[in-house]
Picture 1 (cartoon, helix red, strand yellow):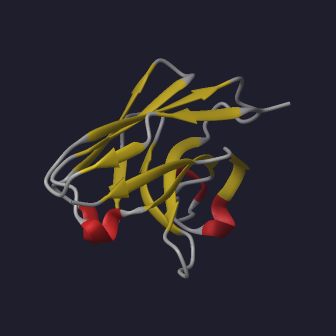
Picture 2: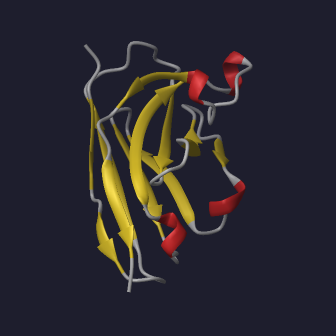
Length: 125
């Protein structure tokens, strides 16, 4: 069984920062990408960032320059959120996905292999 457990969410003022963490119990696919998705109220879930085993990264345009995805070994994934905006308010989900080495966009829902339960981020003054 693969389990992904997120932590680090909370409430922060606009312009603030948070660092999300994801603990991965095991990888069924050694070359799976680590990824973060988010879902705002009333909106579809969207891919935010993904990171391959070789360190290759992909970001969605709306967060480029503000969010940074990183990892510590194979089993811990991070998402540094900076210069947060109210529109970043969402449930953030960690995921393992297929990615470019499969010929697949790692930010697509159809690429997801495993999901975490999510951690809530609220940006509000």
